[in-house]
Image (cartoon, rainbow, N blue to C red; front, side):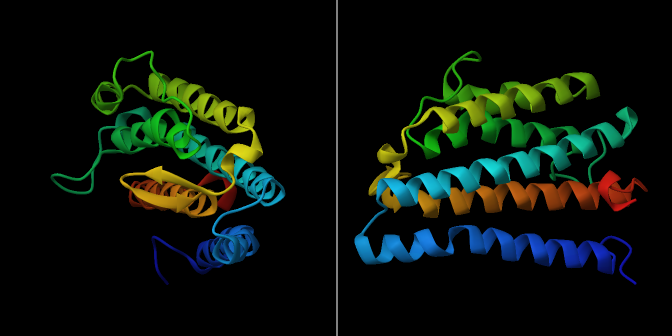
Length: 198
């Protein structure tokens, strides 16, 4: 049996992946056919994207609480993110990339966007990490909730190329789930069972 990923966890991962792919399948077909979404399609993707942000946040927060404070500096190898750095990377995504995804302004309280990551990475205590995970998720979610679905129709520019909102949402959701999986592995390597697996 795989110690890091027992069968039950693998089944849940496959189910989650299938749900994630399903959540954007119809809008992606629309985008191909219409060179973008109409407002109704964009609203559907927005609603499902918000639900996925909630799902990821609940599990990330559960791991943040379950992993002991003395393991927050643990890393699987040199040059790889530590536990706290991985949590704070997720906080950076909520503060910076989620707003960019919908054309909103990134969180400005900590200075220019390029300064946000290094400043958040400097936060290593368990209590502060959990506080920032909650604040950043609330900020990112509020930005998505506040955007008019009609603004998400058609194509947008991101990182120098034109993309549709479903493409960006799926890419960002995939990245957040990747880091969730990373944290599950970190937890299990430190003999911490993810709370929802008990």
